Image (cartoon, rainbow, N blue to C red; front, side, top):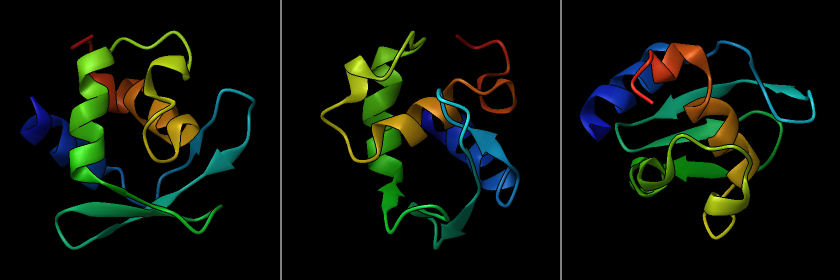
Length: 87
């Protein structure tokens, strides 16, 4: 599943996403293994998204709190452009 989801993430590079509390952000894909967030000095790896996929669908950020940038992971994975009715 990560291959399909990662392709969607790559295809949405530069588009606006919204966190749970309404803050908007974008990201850039770096290489083929991570994204760089524009609102914070953080990068999120493909492996991190793969780990987060074990918990979808997410109701909040609690299941992914142990991962890097949980609010951003939630916003990306729960967005309709990324979900595409898969969860």
